[in-house]
Image (tube, rainbow, N blue to C red; front, side):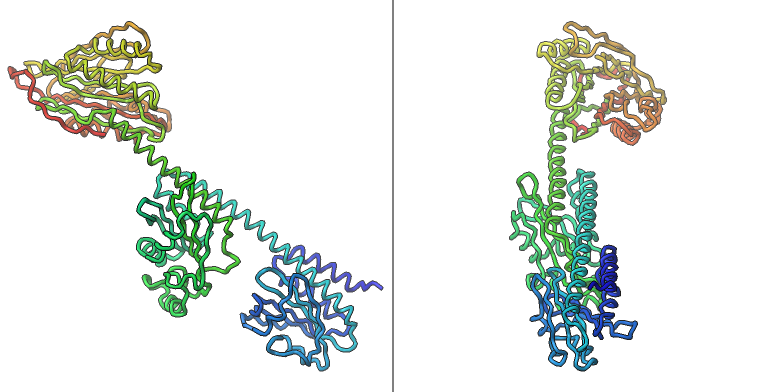
Length: 617
């Protein structure tokens, strides 16, 4: 005969189990139907952590609407023998035979003399077990009671399994979201130390309470960053990361081990993370007073400290390590798989930043070797230059400049721009600058120098074209200087007069390296004392603001505002203004500035003794 009352209750119990977010929410739907079973006077459940730690006990007696709930973390060593295996176990025990040392339910059951305790013990997860039992009298159908207990336990276990599964799925989703955000944050910086700091900040407090990051150098681990949910403990972590010998030895022992290692309890003895009663009391006593706090222990939080160390490995080599400090329940510790994934992403970001740093240094070094290290200066000329790499990540650029003295006492200024970037552009840059420099030092006029460079490019079958402009500055007896300019498709130089007016040197010519036979015409004009000639590449004029306007449109006004300043200030100021103005465009900026200081009328115009000054890079 089917028991409709129990069947309905069991149906409601399954429905409640499908909605429950924790097993304790099923208590009413389990206890009441069992208590309604004929002969049942008491229903009692227990939850155990490990074999012998009683977490709580809940009991409901017939005729009572209020359960008795005992929340505890009491150790009951004798209860360890009750721990079940993988399958639930149903047992009948006379209440009189229960030993209080192993049965905390005994005290409640003795209030029903002559009762029998029918109990089902079962495992919920790897961390602990539980029991559900009833006290029955002689009128009870014990076999039926055992069947109902087994059915109720089936629902409880299924509910708990579902909750764990949903929790794992939610955690996987949260972990995936965190990993995606971590990748985005870490990949957004190409600075090595900033990337490492982001690794630490992203992980706290989502992954752990504290984090330390070390970069592997040839001489050993180098501390870079630390963070903690507590400002005081962050300072302590920073000191540990820099100076603590225990942590340094641990990281050295880890070497190239790819597995994440967790350390706790006795494994932390002698470390700054060791959990001792004295350390915990000291932490609680000094909470909020600052420097005495032990890393990993928050005031009033008695969870044992756990640390993990993950090796950061990218492209077959170790780049560093990340150490997490946990002060949370075991259930909230991240999995090794998650930490490996986070470490892999962090390592790749760090490795990319390291590679970028190496490439940037290589690009800047090569760029420097393509530019003159020194500019000639006499008491007649104030020369200076500025070079700003648009984006070192792209590759070495093709902008170049130089200034050379000539046999007749004049100075030749040259500036140019090779199409594109990279090794081929760099080779062409070196060829162009050194060809022009050699010709101009020998006294070749600007037009002839450009023509001969064009012929050399065609003979070399250069696949790229370039632009250039050459200006010679020749002192005259009346205190002025003759400006002779030839251009090969390059932006025209500007002249800043001593009265603040700005004019353009009108000259033009075909690009270099396009046709075989090309001649270039010269344009002449005079400049007076205090006048300044400014040569530049199109990276300056084509710096573009967000609205679309080019720096070229305001360059004359910005240059005029620099009247009276020396060449170095003019060169650096224009470069920085163009950089600040630029919202788009990543071309290099090169400037060469010459300010004519003048000579007294009738002075000796033979070449003056020269000095060499280092040019700006």
